[in-house]
Image (cartoon, rainbow, N blue to C red; front, side):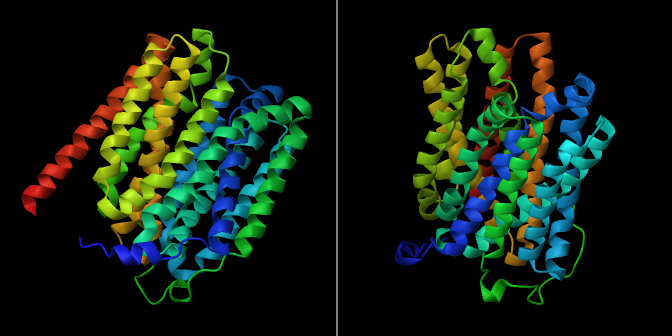
Length: 392
């Protein structure tokens, strides 16, 4: 593919709409992460146990995954900006409604509704951002778009715990709802390109469970999700096992490294393609997880966080952009639905798999399994490149 360097350099990324969509997306993920460590405590407070905690976590992901195949068909019939706002409104009022749940059954129903709103919002955020960004700088723009999300994912759990320590569940849930209503307000002021508004007469409304053209990169993000679940779900417990007390700083360094690398990796993607990002980024991730496996000192833990942040922070937006580039504009929802579903399946399935590994062995062995996922990622991607060159 021949690249027009002058066009890449002059195409404008930053606009008020891009800023609004980036911040609103970050708020959505921040509230999601605020609830991860606090909802299990609420489940126990209303009479649930460990099994019910698993149900509350699982039903949310199932609902989000189930609704995404409808995103493409809905976008052909309705304005996707209004569909995004609908997803955010559902997420906002579901978050506020958690406090009204008097038992686990009611909580599960609210989680089911919330998961549907989250599934819609995450899909349309990614596709609307891709529309706003000039195609010549899409890799760079998606990288910037994901910076807020990365920071939110890292600080969200800390904000949730702090809010619960200072206040109570009611204020935690109402505070989360307020943040999401602010995201709704930002989404209202997002302006899409005139030529992309509506259906444009392209395509036919249909349910697409899987967009086959993005299947291979989605399989790669599945492996990344499995490995990421080892950090998201189990690092705090691993830290206790190792006597490491700076968990907050560990996640802060991951966020900082991800922020820094996204300022660079997107431009590299636009100029040199996916391989220039995915191969070194997977090696950074393997290095970070290997250091984490052997870590004995704070310096080793912090080094592991930085290496992992460089790797994950590059890979996620690169594969996301790759998926978007493989399909036509009116098919972006199908591509993003498949992409996010595979990532969420990786997170959910990875939590189950790695939990079993920790039960049979120890929390430390989780990171050997995570390293294996990245080695598989690297092997499959290199084979893909070799096969592509042979058929070129």
